[in-house]
Length: 214
Image 1 (cartoon, rainbow, N blue to C red):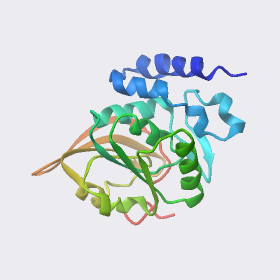
Image 2 (image 1 turned 60 degrees about the vertical axis):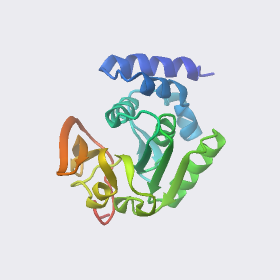
Image 3 (image 1 turned 90 degrees about the horizontal axis):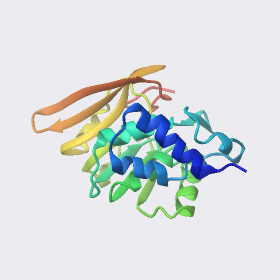
Image 4 (image 1 turned 180 degrees about the vertical axis):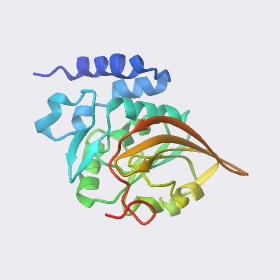
């Protein structure tokens, strides 16, 4: 029988702290959220491995380090309303839910969204709202947001997501080619946006009107 707690602690110590993530709140959330619960039963035994994992429909759950790094880059303090684009398994939403007041997450594939909703409900995450829609449009009715996280690779930064950020708000998004991107942190100011480049990364493509075509 897999000792998930020990695996999780090892994941945080070796893959996340070992690569330089220092935000104690992020580390606590990564230790707390049971990653294996968000995966198909057949692959739960490798839930805490140092790589992305398949969740069906051609979608993946991001590598633990990438989840932690992207979360740290948002700089959450606890009171924020966060928009996530690409719900996937719901794991990243759960990590965000530990660190902010409300998560609004958009997923284009209905079956994936339904599975995520079921898992989040089972684990008691009541501060996560899910919408099935083209995520490149954001969630206009609930804007503005303090932070936006995009968990799929975009050819460019979708304009609606910038519009839905508050002044001073932060967005973390992979931008680049279809099969390789750079992780960007975008800060919205009264004058426009300031972009900081983090690390190279590879995400599934962000499909939608302001993203890649299928």
